Length: 147
Image (cartoon, rainbow, N blue to C red; front, top):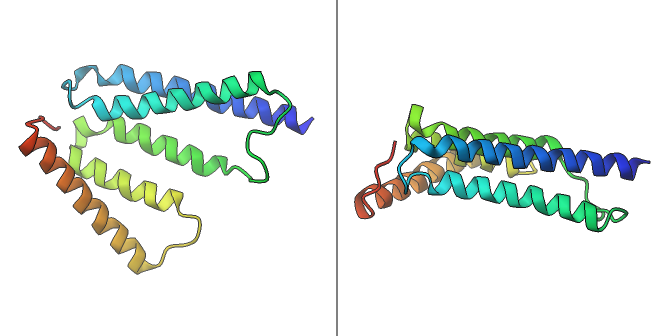
């Protein structure tokens, strides 16, 4: 019985992933062609992952999708929400602030053990440096207009 409930939960998360990915793609219409590459790519990955889970449930209905590992749905949901907010926020708040916050949020969400204050500061600084370097590459070298 729990296996069936677990499969329904996985199917629900997969359908939500597909829906959120499609919604995020629909929101990129106002962006420039190069500016929508990253949100569209992240959305396509979410859609592909959701479709992969659905296909796996259909083809192997009695098999566990993840053996001997408990899935942390809360953290997976936080990660998906972070990616969605990141994809939809640069127009309002700017590329560098939203991307820096998204990089830091993903670092905190995906880390399993608690972070020390030093680790938090290093992750935040590294995220800002990474995003600044990436934005300079896009805007100066590739001439992509960033929000």
